[in-house]
Image (cartoon, rainbow, N blue to C red; front, side):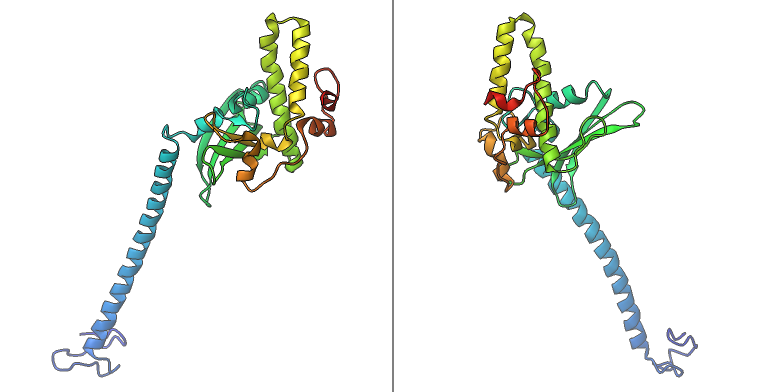
Length: 261
């Protein structure tokens, strides 16, 4: 028998201890067993952590299935509306804004490290030299509501702060509205077109500018003007007309929006 501590050979049948290290066979066996147990525990812990991670992922996916029975939070955002702009869906607004610039768009969703559910859309061309990315985060307090939390747009809008967010999103809706109305106006008289435009701009003056940052599904039954409060935020107190005037955006008549208050 060899001592595990000093390496010397001794007769384990005649003696119960190593004459060189004075370590008993029982002590040696106990240490060896202890080491084996420790190694086993490490493997078990690794397996346990892996299983826990898989379970967490599975729970999040099941949670998403329960919230979104069609297994597609992307559809909830795409077919939803920004704030009180319930005449044009989110997808229609974005396609109107970027469809003429980019030839492709990819929508996807997933969870962040902090377990927030995020829907993302990327607009890009085949060369992928430039692209635009927009992200929506589903609100924790209401699964039917979401907030635009990220815009990276090298093609049209420079978005660096909250003010830029407000201007970009409200202008996206306004331009999409005009594009849609251009189609609807084909059979209208000039007077009717002007009246509709004036009514539209008057309506903008009654909408708080923060509304465009928050959205909800098409089935949402709550007050769309107050969605921001679900995110512990408050209305800015600045209506869309004043915001666009401050950003020096004029309407299609070249007039200030505030003229229609």
